[in-house]
Length: 202
Image (cartoon, rainbow, N blue to C red; front, top):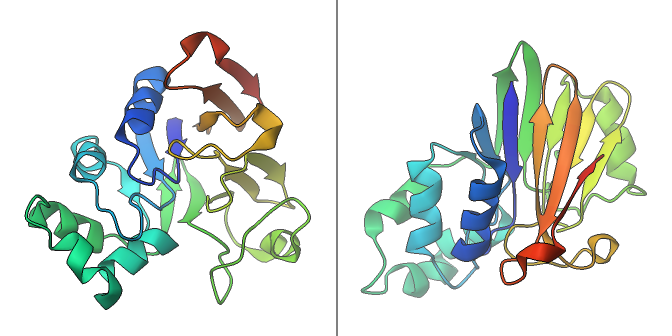
């Protein structure tokens, strides 16, 4: 099974669209949250995810926009209320059966208070050994990570919306997981400069 993994769109529909074009056909499309900016809704990004049948969880920016603090931003005249409703219906975490394996999709840490940034040195990363899943897919840091922690393979695809990862030259990125082999390919790309893109197996 071929699973496309994206995260941290932050309303960047050009970056999202390029990722979807490049990854091609996938059996599942997973989005690990922060579809929008906390005070800037994106009809285009949300519509594209809905159109592609993406399995999506809410990130901290999404939750702010959907909270009372984001009412003005999501109620603007040009905003499609049906798309706001679709986003609001997404969970904060999701467990899926993929090709007979268990996958946990969340935005940040799967442990309370659920907001920690997970890096290779984070204590919460080691705690994931106790999770009864085969894969943990998350985002939040905008930094790529593919790391086996006991049974779970932890995957962060980086960001398709805001490039902050110095390890890949601050390019946008997405991942594709092959559940048959457990291979994860992370592809780096630029929206403006296609020749700088490269593919790496992690």
